[in-house]
Amino acid sequence: MNDDNPIGINRREMLASGFATAAATSVPISAQAKPQPADQPNRMKVTMTVNGEKRTLDLDTRTTLLDALREHLELTGTKKGCDHGQCGACTVIVDGRRINSCLSLAVMHPEAEVTTIEGLGKPDKLHPMQSAFIRHDGYQCGYCTPGQICSAVSTLQEMRDGIPSHVTADLEGTPPFSVDELRERMSGNICRCGAYSNIMEAMLDVAGERA
Amino acid sequence: MRAFSFERATSPAEAAAAVARTPGAKFIAGGTNLLDLMKLEIETPTHLVDVNDLGLDKITPTDDGGLRIGALVRNTDLAADNRVRRDYGVLSRALLAGASGQLRNKATTAGNLLQRTRCPYFYDPAMPCNKRKPGSGCAAIGGFNRNLAIMGVSDKCIATHPSDMAVAMRALDATVETVKPDGKTRAIPIADFHRLPGDTPQIETNLQPGECITAVTLPRPIGGKHVYHKVRDRASYAFALISVAAVVRDDGTGRLAFGGLAHKPWRVEAAEAKIGDGAKAVTDIALAGAKTTPQNAFKLPLVERTLGGILTEARA
Image (cartoon, rainbow over all chains, first blue to last red):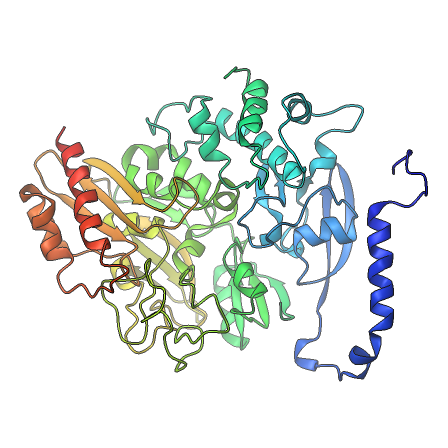
């Protein structure tokens, strides 16, 4: 996963082993607890195409699309921020539309086509929006970036499809690729570092407009 | 989140019957509000009936020159529909003023009507709330109520209905079409769809248990200038402090509905006769009987001034 990692263990494996240790030392309490029949997990199979690959999962029905991607398919590029649809860090593209993957159950998506940040481009062949974010320094900590990029790609598509926005002056006209339009359309993606102006530059660059 | 079983319904009547026969069952369409509430265990369904396969995702003309909007039409698609943009601009504008791009892509027409209040005390299980736990009291009355209701309130609840879409539909005299668990259909005027809180704020609509929304119909276009003006604490992705849905014709007649004021979209038809006399004449009637708190009394002048701006714009 990371060739220049000297100890051959990635951050995620490190975290996972840490949690396993913590769990092992605190097991007695949960082991004593009686099972609660009223709250038994229900499992269900779902098959969807994720980044071009057909994947079948057997999931607790409560599993969100976000958790299915991160915890079951190990596609950890998509991030969990607020887990309530307020921050946009979990944005992925499902059947051509951006959605909050935290507010959708995986079992609601049989046969869906899901694209995550890992599916947009690869390190040696980046999506133009990924390249533009790098070129324009459209992030600081990077946590919101996968959601920002998926949202930005979909935003430009929505504009090409002629979908109006709150700031579109003429409801029946074609929305212009203006800063006002892009800012309004990207309001569902929060950046705690405040990289908004560079994200805007990256989007304008990809849209073929310069600020 | 509590555990639940899950099924995918194949027809509206089957979906209605499935919810009616399973105690604790709920429909799920977009899921954007329901899952939010399930994670907080404010909603705790034991069974979910997924209605996404019901084919109710079309917008079609009605025989009398209006539009029938399928219950599952996504907010994005409804706002972007060319007929809606041309003939029912206030509805497009209201939808585009709500939520975020991601949420509008998933949220449905029926789900938007059925979304729950964003009253902070409803969302906080540590606090009393007659809507979340009937009989527990209302922490909002006497609490932080700056953005809560001033019209049609009761001493049990001062929550507002959060939808923008529903406010525009109220101005357009929309009708909600449903199917009941026994397979019978009915049409509910949107004026009678949502309820005021009264003594039972936990009952928010006049739907019967298991009754499934299949469509919302709009009557034939009424022309006029369509405006939806939403005033909020930030420029995008925030719920309304107040909103005004207006259709104003050249002859001075029109329709007005208000959001952010009540447990349902607020409309007083008698006030619309005063449109020609200006905003104050309208709000003197539409907002008569307002019950404000020191924190939310600002909504009265805010509605009047917002409406004043709209009427000036409409006359220009």
